[in-house]
Length: 337
Ligand code: ASP
Image (cartoon, rainbow, N blue to C red):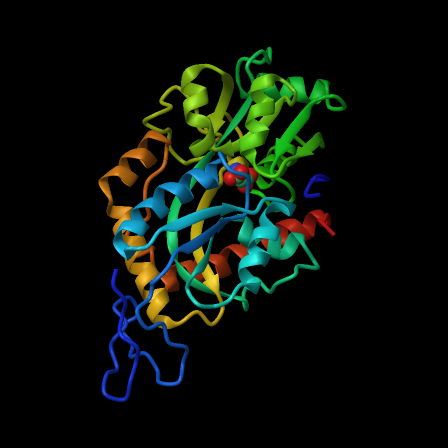
């Protein structure tokens, strides 16, 4: 545990017109920020990790579909570093006008405890659009690792604990959390190598510059299928259709490594209700888009249902997950700062 160390607008409100917000069912209040004609220009979706990684992949698929619904381009911008907290901080400080949003994952919750000095308040500085997907992790290694299964990998890691390296996307990343669960389960701290995202980390894993990684299936599935890396287990409760031969961590004897990497879309606090409502509506359309669902399935995940792709569901998830991981992180007593 030592190493706890991603069309046309709604009319402006007026005294004559007080529309119901479809996703909330409550009347928009007079006096709050307006978003007449939203969106009338390009929207930026910040991904707090490097391009080409698993969070980026999810964001680009969803953003492409949402762009069609909104009638304006959503451009993905990668702001990697500090386990996702730099990108989240950028969105927290952005203008709350509906033109900057954040695609982040479980790291939004864990970083709230891992970092005692964040440049933002996780629970106060964001509005919510909705949950997107819950992606399993896979424990993988460079292709020429001699281990044949998870037990073999653990034996190897324990025997070589000073030279084995574990890649992650920085403290607060999903790969960091999963790596932490791995090291905790095997009671052996290992050397970690932080990247700005697991896209670049994968490049080094493929090149054999790092040994082990725990990463979302949205980054590893194609590589595992292509035999370019070795895989040992998946962190979901059941095996995945696209990686049928891969045992779950529970089957492999390590149920404590089970974890799901939920993703959500956020906006800066104070974003007009009309804009949030349109974003949620477009997210729900994207998650029912056949192309998005098909690509998600190929990558070992599935879109969140409408009931979860709502501001209330994301808020509840974030709050619940902060509470869930706080004691784990505090128990380990290791922080990023
Ligand atoms: N998979 C990374 C993580 O560990 C982030 C990324 O590069 O998308 O959180």
